[in-house]
Length: 103
Image (cartoon, helix red, strand yellow):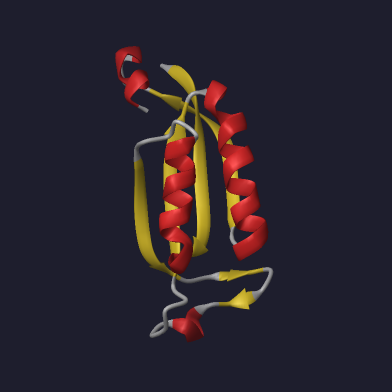
C-alpha cells in the first residue's frame, strides 16, 4: 500500500473538456467521469436542470502527492471562472507501486 491523492471535481458538464485538459496538463492522465450528477450544495438543488445543457459531472482521479500542486494551480482558475468544486484527499492505493507511474 502507498499514499496517493484522490481528486474529486463536481462541475458543469459544459466545462468538462477544459477540466480534463487541465488535469492532463498537470500530469494526471487517468480519470473516471460520472455524468448527470444532481444534488444540493451551496447554490441549492440542481435537480430541476435534468433536461438542460447544464448537467453536472463528477470527475474522480488519483495522483502522486507531488502532482497535487500543479493540479491545484491548473484547476483553481477554471473553477473560479466557471463554477464547480474540487476536493483533494489522502487515500491509500493497494496496487503494486509499479502502477503509480501510470497515474
